[in-house]
Amino acid sequence: MSKARLAAGADDDKVRLDKWLWAARFYKTRQLAHEALELGRVLVDGERVKGSRVAEEGDQLLIRIERLEYKVTILTLATQRRPAREAQLLYSESEASVTAREHQIALQKAEHASYPHGDGRPTKKARRDISRFKDSW
Image (cartoon, rainbow, N blue to C red; front, side, top):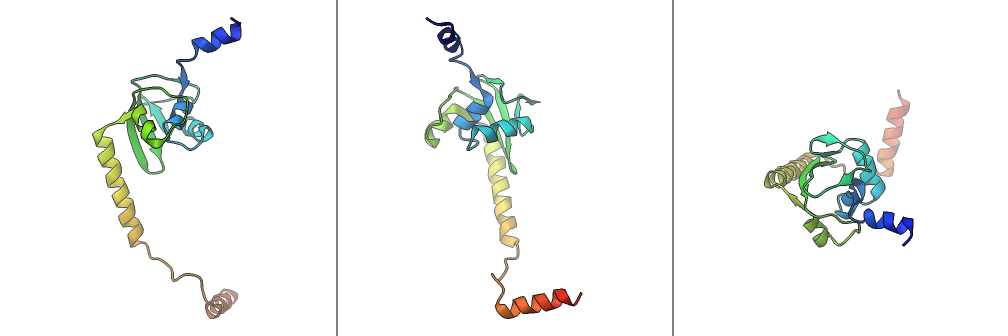
């Protein structure tokens, strides 16, 4: 057996954290997962880590995506991106995390509902009025 094959066989059980985040469907691409790790949006056991860090079963992750937080524990390792149903089996999320995220989503929906929505694109007359108003300054 060649040295390259032996080395590859030794690393079969190791998975980079950015690759695991991609496989678990938290990010659409490995590059986005890597950037999130570099920017500190993903913490492992409360610490910032690099994307090249090896993920291990039992690691506690705090993942911040936009305004939502996921507190998950890695159950199994994966290197391939599978369907969403299978990806959910890679981790377990705490009940407190689920309820907090649902509450945050409800707040965002309520906030969005209270935004004033425009009447759409201005008419030709309205554009002329806007132009006249801007020119008067």
